[in-house]
Length: 147
Image (cartoon, rainbow, N blue to C red; front, side, top):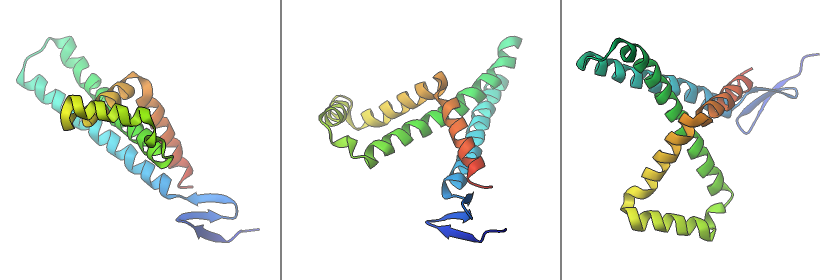
């Protein structure tokens, strides 16, 4: 027996099965952007190899390493941004520690503190394994959101 297809809050269902979700579409966009960012960083590495002669081993390994670094940094930024938006959604940013940390960053490092902290944590998180976790999470969302 076929169930009728219906939509609720932007999510399409057929019976009790999820057919399409905005989260799945968003995940597909992130997956595509991560490959573009990784390719751009690898291309910059290839241009660097062309401009400055390197030993053969470095010339072979550098583009692959640069591809991973670009890909992992993208997913690190996505992971940290998701964490911060979750904090904001839960009103967790109203605590004393949050205000003290932001105040210290802004006071000691001017307006460059929070973006620099975001970039540093995002790069470290992505390269040290968080990028793989975020990629797998978004890949699952993309697969579930468009059946």
